[in-house]
Image (tube, rainbow, N blue to C red):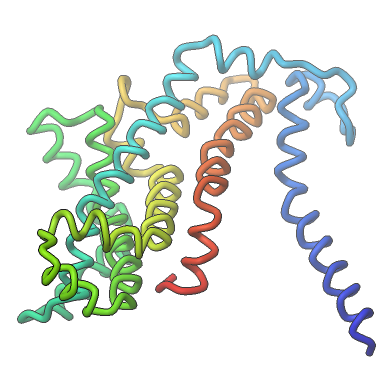
Length: 271
């Protein structure tokens, strides 16, 4: 088979894959532009009556848009806290050898493997006793149980690829450790930081069990708010698909901003 034919087949299969991948998202976006009566009334490939009422409801009803604000708040907070804890921990695992380091590293990974329901009851009781229940900080701290081990595992692989001679040279040149870590070492592993930040954001954004149990009113996430579309008459499909379409936007923005780091991270790091 000629190389041109092979390339044409590859492009064709890639196009088929992209269409199959985007079709559910496009269908959901089109449904969000239709009134619920039209969705339930007849099946059409293209909306006959375009309407922005579903999006207008989300942006004008405080119970809806606060759900997005709460989700973004605890997700960004979790990402910052997870990286702040994972960076020095990963550096320690990368540069030092101490008693039980492999066992401790494995124990961190077991937290990532454990289901969220295992930690649900003790975390719920702890947060109620200390007054953290129904706050974005409560969800952010709970998600650190899973995101910190993942971030440590990713960052340790990037840090181990940096020669130790760089640390020694910086020490000889008079760099104190905080200045060396921020000015010299961190730029060398920025792709790893981008990958770790991406996964922390995504896992925190899509997690539902802890976010739903640890909040009630003030910090309720958008995933819980979306259950309000269920009524005695059934699901409000138009409003539900509009909320789902808007839920995809933060993740798409994160992927756009860290796309170069993600590509390098998959090529070079432990991902």
